[in-house]
Amino acid sequence: MSAVQVDRAVAPGAGRTRTATRSRRNRRREAIWCYVFIAPAVLGLLLFSLGPMVASFLLSFTSYDLLSSPQWTGLENYAALASDGLFRKSLAVSLVYGLVSVPATLVLALVLAIMLNAKIPALGFFRSAYYLPSVISGVAVAMLWKWLFNGEYGLINVALGKIGIAGPAWLTDENWALRALIFMSLWGFGGTMLIYLAGLQGVPKELYEAAQVDGATRWRQHLHVTVPMLSSVTLFNLIMGVINALQVFAEPFVLTPNGGPDNSTLLLSVYLYQNAFQYLKMGYASAIAWVTFAIILALTALVFRSMPLWVHTEGGDER
Image (cartoon, rainbow, N blue to C red; front, side, top):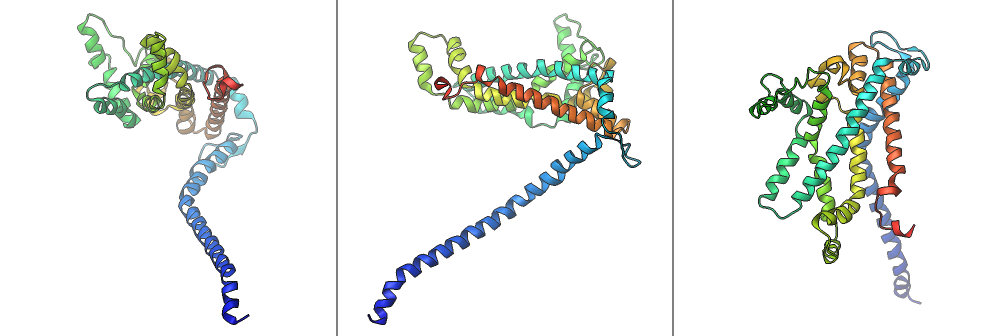
């Protein structure tokens, strides 16, 4: 066999080897660039989320006033929470706030999403108008509502006065302060509505056509088609609503500083802030934060456990 014939016989194998080497080099280069691009996010997570969480967990077992070194106290902070009347008050206020505001926001967002899913004039304007409040700063929203809720010259009481109703002292009356906060929370339904609107785009038209053939009214179509088909979207919105309701801080703090009249708006986040930055009890505040986290975790687990009862899935009929 001549030298040329030998080269021709070896060439195909050598070509595959070079191709495999080039492919491995490309994958390695892509992996390096992948690590470079995700590094800022990973570092940010470690420095600004995971790191403070670990520090907060350790501080919850100490007595720390920011001026002297932390003193290890074990479970003393958690034991003190069990007998703290203000903590129980703030927990009750937060639960009432969440139990009312979250379902009300879900219903309002779903109704408006259904309306904005129809073919109406100026649809883009209405969708933007309803979503716009969700992107405004919480402090700016709170300042606006503080003026609206003013008992003397606020727009709400002025409007009520036009129809002969004497409006209450929304933010200074302990019977109305929490109701005012719940009413204001409905202002931020735009994000929830937008997620519902996206979910409505995925509901098959054939289901509505079949319901019409069966003689279902528009109300029954939404009750038996829209609501079940959006149950997974409702699950997501419900969990996010629970988390947000137990963490909301800016609006109640600006509207009713120091927990409002007779601590009627003393949410968990506000009580945590008071202990941390007004009373300089960072260890106690850290314990409140971790108890709040445990409550959110328990409520989220409860929602997930209830999924088989009300969330529609594609394989649900097979189970």
